[in-house]
Amino acid sequence: DAHSQPSPSAPSAPAAPAAPAPPGAPIVLDEDADDAVADELSPDTAVRLRGLKGAAHLNGRRAIVRSWLAERGRYEVTLHPDGETKAVLPANVQPLPILQEVELLRDRLTSDNGPQSVAQVVVRSALNRLTQLRLTSEILVDTKVGKTVNNTSQAFAGKEDEISDLAKRLVLRWKDMYRRDVEADKVIAEKAAREKAAAEQAAAKRAFVERATAAAAKAAQAA
Image (cartoon, rainbow, N blue to C red; front, side):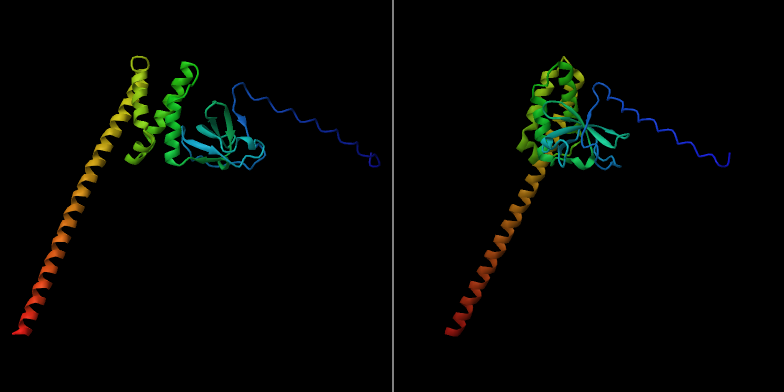
């Protein structure tokens, strides 16, 4: 009736516990950080972890981007060299400078990657990334990555021809680029040599004219 007291509301049901991560799922780091909204790094990009708070011991570790986890706003990355998988925010990964990235990819081609199936995944990932990068002749010389990729092509020949052919095409592309760079440098050097010789001849001619003029003036004064 109008004078009856309202019955107390029923207690809210306790929240259901979070579902456990499926086996093999990447471990999410810094779960309480702000969510990310952008996907900028392509798969196989080499990065360095930074700014982690809950897993600060991983700061500075190098890793390879596997994929973008849109539902979590994080990158799935594989740590180098142990292969442990993590999920990290974009703010916690920093792309490596290209020279350091090439050195890391070179090392992944020569490291002991465990079972053959795992090794093939690691090698294919490294070759795919090297194919995407725009390398210079200086980087090729400094890192000697061409020799490593050539050895990879030979090692997989007759066993995994797709990997062997990918490595072979990469080596041929680099050889062609290096040849063109050497030819371009030669043209530049020859042009510089011609310009230097012309400048020296012009300077010698000016000096000769100045000496002749001075001698003529001196002779005219003496006459």
